Structure formats: C-alpha cells, structure tokens
Length: 372
Image (tube, rainbow, N blue to C red; front, top):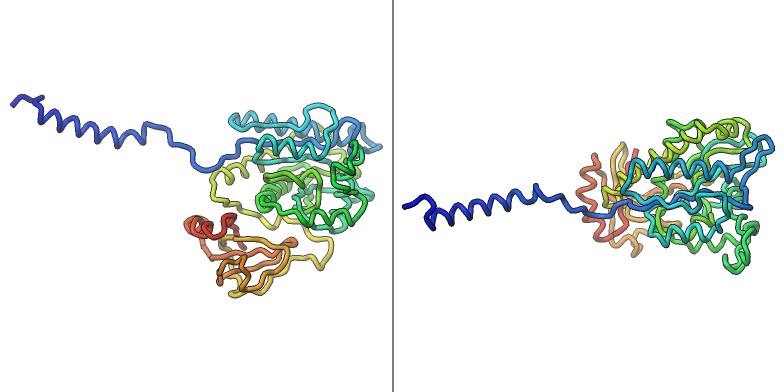
C-alpha cells in the first residue's frame, strides 16, 4: 500500500486537524473578559472668573494650581496607558459650571472622575491633604469645605432653577442629598484611600486628613466612581510654600497617578474586588461618630482575614430584613456613617475570590474586603 494512500492520508489529515485545534487557542490572542477602565475624566476645579482659594502671600490662585496638576496627571496617564482615554473638563483658564463637570463625565461614559482642588480655611493652622467622596456626612469641617466648593454655583446664571433651589449656605438645602443613592460609593472610597496612601508615603505634604464624605455638588450626579482631592491648604504657610513649587506639584500628580494605576489594576481584574485600607479614612470631628463594632450574629471573626461585603446601609437592618435575603451568618460593622454587612471568613484573597461569584448571584454589588 502506498504511503500516501487514501486511508493513511485521512488519518494524517485527522491528526493534523486535531493538532491545529489544540494549537489555535495559543495562536489567537485571548479575548478580553469583563470590564476595563478605559476612560477617566480629570476635573481642574474652578477657573475663569472663579479663582477658587486665593492667598495674599502668593501669586498663585487655586485655579492655577488645579489646572497645572490636572494637566500633569493627564499627561502621565496618557503616556503610561495609551489605551485609556483622558478627558479634561478644562485645559485652559475658563469657567465650567459645576453641573457641566459631572455631565462631561456622564456623557463620555467615564469609568472614573477625579476633581482636583486646593483647600483653604479660616485658621492658618489647618493643613494636610484629604480626599472626598459623595456622602451625607455633615460634620463641621466637612461642611466648611462643602459651603466653599458648592458656592461656585452662585457664579452661574439661573443657578436656583438649575440646582432645584439649592442654597449652599442653607443647611436645610442639604436634605436633598439624603435622597442620593451612590452605587459606586465603595469604589470611590477605595480610590480615595489609594490617593491618601500615596500622599502619606510619597507626597510633599505628608499630613493626611483622611478620606471623608461630604455632599458636594460636583460629585452628586456622576454615574461612576468619583472623588474630589484637596491637595493642601493655601491658607497654611507650609502647605502653600510646597504647592507653589513645580517640583512638588509634579510629585502630587505622580501620587495621584500611582493611585490611579493601582485602582485600574483592581478595576480591570473584575469581580468588584476592591481592597479598602480603612486606616486612610478620616478621624471624625465628633467623638460620637467614631467607629464602633455593632453586635451581630455571629460576632465578626478575629484576626486578619478577608470577607465579602454584600451591602451598606445608613440605618441598621433587622436580622430578618428582606435586604439580607435570608443570610444568617452575617457580620455587621458601623464604619464612617454606614452599617456594612459582610459574609465569610477567608484566610486568603484567592479563597474569597472563589466564593465571590456565588455570593454575587444574590448580591450583585458584592466585593471582597480585607479585615484586620
């Protein structure tokens, strides 16, 4: 029988086909799975006829520092992540309404919104960095920042109609924020904590005032993880001296970039898995607001481990609450103004990640947390 007779040839062809089937997955690039952080909006606070904070001791105003930092940060992201689209709310000295800043992010389906600001206070002793997320914590120092940042709307035409009668100086106006439900609260907290970690580790201004919640107009209607970063105080001589130096502004931009890189890595990994370093959270102004552990059934396991957070609530839920969907083995902690509910006790992140898909069938927003 010839070597290339019909039967041997068919066998050879079948063997080659089987080999190709095995090789094809290795030859074809793997398809991307899950979501990716593809678009970031960088917002340089204030601008144009709104200078922001002004220091009589410095030629620089807040709007100038904000824009310089935004452009430095955006350039770094564009260089290191060419696949990420960077959008600026302003690239020049011009005025942009608060509502429009968030609208820019929403229209472009951004995955992250970063608003950059410089702080100011009546007391020259106030100093340090802090990062805000949208929330209803109206403690004294937070409200001072809110009144100052939200007062920008007074420079806009027909602001009363546009912002539904909101008055930044009227405490009763902030009631509208109690209706806010931010689906990206935990992701915002995670990114804010990463920013503060970098400031503490590498920043020229190492004093950290932590991660805070506040009802800020610029963050109110954004539909993605969003933060407002206060990089220091123009009203403080030490902070002001550091902020006025270009080398230090580059360090600050680099710090925010490193936080972005770390956040993007977790974001792209998918599964809603974000590690939040709660040591970066702010120390409350009111001792009554300090963190407390709420008794639960069973009590939260001791020692460093991982859990899966299933939900957070401004009010404490009953053990038989429908929102817990029948879960009995639930840990509950009151942290930073929220009752946070989690399940499981895993010694490694990998073990928690294996269980996460099962938990997400009942709680779609579930994610992994590290517990000390």
